[in-house]
Image (tube, rainbow, N blue to C red):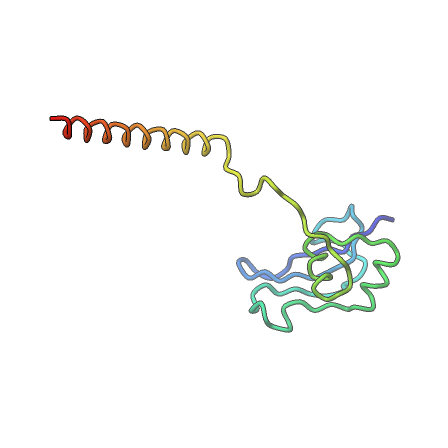
Length: 128
């Protein structure tokens, strides 16, 4: 059976609370799970020690049996020193989209035309 270590959402509307669970990959997000191995409360400050709670022994057991953590859980495990997570590489993240790039090019062209027109007007005034 393929298993994942993932987050199961709980809490009320606009007050999220997550259980870190080991579940079959086919089970629904908030549905049946095999074992609860921790919790995550995003409402607490980032430096709070109770923000992420992990049962280290059980997580190591499940990682040893082949359970794959999701990306967010892998970040928690990396912070706790249980798993080495390689940083992702997205070289296109800072690049503008096609339409935004076109708008920027049009704006630059308009500024260059305005600067050229101003320079021509200054030369004409100086020539008189």
